[in-house]
Amino acid sequence: MNNTEIIKELPKLDLHCHLSGSIRPETILEIVKKEGIPHYTDDLNEFKGHVQAHEECTSLKEYLERFQLTLSVMQKKEHLTRIAYELIEDLSKQNVYYIEIRFAPFFHLNEGLSFDEAVEAVLKGMEDGKRDFGVISNLILILMRHHSPEKSLEVVRQGRKFLGKGVVAIDLAGNEQDYPPELHKEAFQLAKEYGFHRTVHAGETGLPENILTSVNELHAERIGHGVHAYMNDEVYRFVKENRIPLELCVTSNIQTKAIDSYEEHPIKRYLEDGIIVTANTDNMTVSNTDLIEEYEKLVTKIDFSLDDLRRVILNGVEVSFASVEDKKYLRKLFNEKFNTLLK
Ligand SMILES: [Zn+2]
Image 1 (cartoon, helix red, strand yellow):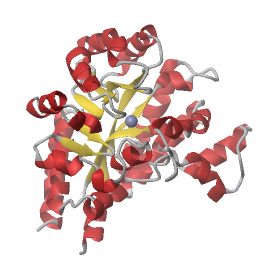
Image 2 (image 1 turned 135 degrees about the vertical axis):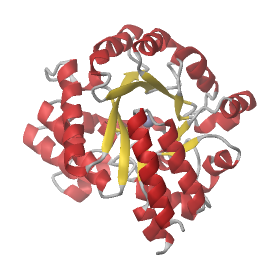
Image 3 (image 1 turned 60 degrees about the vertical axis):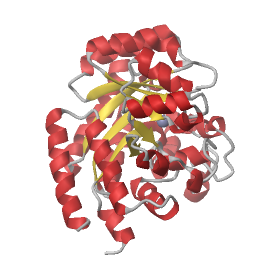
Image 4 (image 1 turned 180 degrees about the vertical axis):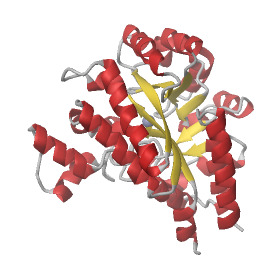
């Protein structure tokens, strides 16, 4: 087998994937037509250009604009279930065995769904997907930086009943420039008391010091992106010494202009320096990528060996928010597959 074939066969997992950024373009188009939502074109190829980020994308802000249309098709139970189910189906074709899907419940209540209905609908799609395709998944509830601290507390309070039923963690996402993490400190404190795992988007658009605040004040166990840790020596040492796992998303970082090119991405440097890095997609549709593509890029553009890939994948198993039993299962399965594929 050549590297491309091996990469395709490798057992995979994704710890940083937004549901709203990972909907099949065909499905978005079908739902906008069905629901009478204004859209640019009925031509699928042309339509894809409106839901995927381009090379010319200039910032995180522009990248995030792609989500307006995708959120409009995620306002009904049947659509949320279908979207989650299809994502699991797509993952199964890439030999993905585990995924943590994240979504912000408050973005899906515009047309009358309750918080519980939105979460239940996504969980149903994930459960059906596990039944049909064998992919294990867990759900992360996102708190939005620009929402009020009270609203964040609401996600934690209302989300609590789903702990042990598919929800494992909370996350903080959105505009990092204008809303520092400490605004949502109270919600993260409560989440910790309730038994949620915690991850926080930080150090994605500069501001590496947000990584420190997220760990020290928000009790983050992992950092979403954290790609800019290298910009501040103190932060970098902290991440390294405290073994804080980073959920890196290489293609997304380039599209949002966090990093100029694949070749300049620090993931390999981090790995060699002993930082706990994982490789993830962020948004499969908006970034027009999947895990096969991401692993390919690591090997062809960032000089990863297949053994580097193995280390990054196994890091993912260890720092995932999966249950003890699921981790044990994944560890065994992945090692068996590695032994056959990487002899
Ligand atoms: Zn993200």
